[in-house]
Length: 295
Image 1 (cartoon, helix red, strand yellow):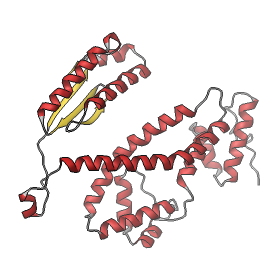
Image 2 (tube, rainbow, N blue to C red; image 1 turned 30 degrees about the horizontal axis):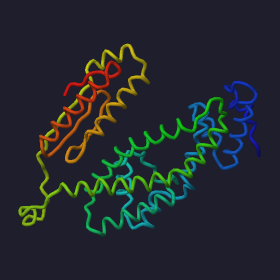
Image 3 (cartoon, rainbow, N blue to C red; image 1 turned 90 degrees about the vertical axis):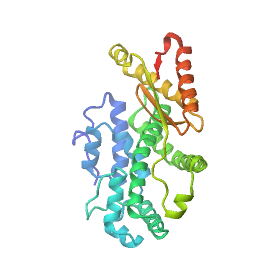
Image 4 (cartoon, rainbow, N blue to C red; image 1 turned 180 degrees about the vertical axis):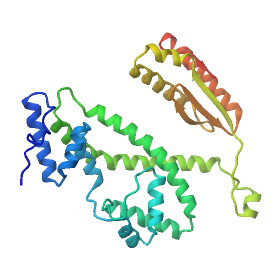
């Protein structure tokens, strides 16, 4: 039975007949694909209707509960839930059929990691790190693709179809790129790691390694925030991140950037000092278009 979306009030905020027709077509497509009316209503209220097809392209067909995935993968359900939470994802209810074939595959990988001797707590520690990192990766890639594909005058239907197609085409490419970058970072970390006699005798890796840490801060960033619009502040922070990345050559590592500051670290203080001084010089070379740096 078809739904009268106009009577349901789902077209009320559309500006113009063309926008109403486009939304009605999108709502009909999603309804035919099995999206419940209440989910459509919520998406309209939250101004995210055009993103639903892309979300569904990533989700796949949800068919399993946590206990069903746990049984098929040979993993404790509580461990799956703990990993979900460690990754920063919502904890599904016991009867919620929200897990997919991809979730089942991931659970089987988790089983293999346990069988390889990796400890449960260690796996959850890594999951927490991955969750925090992937939140930033997902946000950055979403912003990149979203801005590249959004065009002036688009209707919700056009955006929805374009984003869904891009999600299907680009996600495997991004996954391959992330795998490559992970291997590069792992290789670089191994090149700087050590296993000394003490570790061989004890069977435990040294937990603490002495490093030098340095910070570079944009001078007057708070005052700039009072007179510059948010996009301009974002561009300044982006330039700082780019400059810090370019200066952070091994053994120096860019630990993180937080708005107006960059944190770098190195096991050797001399290259760290060189990187910080170079970063200050880069800021000075930016002239009046870029604030000074204090390191």
